[in-house]
Image (cartoon, rainbow, N blue to C red; front, top):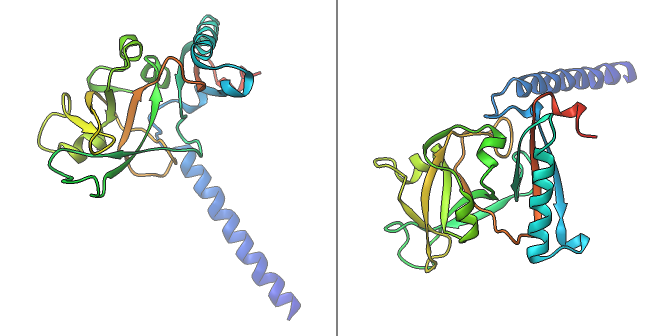
Length: 222
């Protein structure tokens, strides 16, 4: 009885292990929409290090410029969230003609606050319009860059550029200025998702440095 039980348990473990290895192998071949082996990131919480407001913004920008100056670095960006990370920035999206009152259920869409270098640092493909620009952040403009899936979901029969949405039913509108190709934001195996990119504030006290390197990033992190 013990031998039979041990063989049965071992068989289950072997099968489970084989399936896990197969899943990892498949995941490693998934096109994420960016070159994951040449991207490293570092999360910095300014408020936990005595940095607030303009001081935090100046610190982050100086750090970005110093990283950008390294010969082995191609591009550096700042963002509130890094793709495939566990945390999530969720937004409630209201569209004219879709919700009639504040009590109506909004569309739930994930996203991130990003700087003007994000699209380049991640190596994303701009499908139409433009990306975030420095003036968008300086003037705190209500503009957004969205993914192709979000554009098709909310404006299937028209151009998404120039369309508006709100993050509160009675809030000020945000205007779509650009559309980027879909990329994996939560897991390698996910279907294409709607995703929003909003301009990162100059005085934010938390940011992720996203660094795209010329060589595999693992050897350069230290």
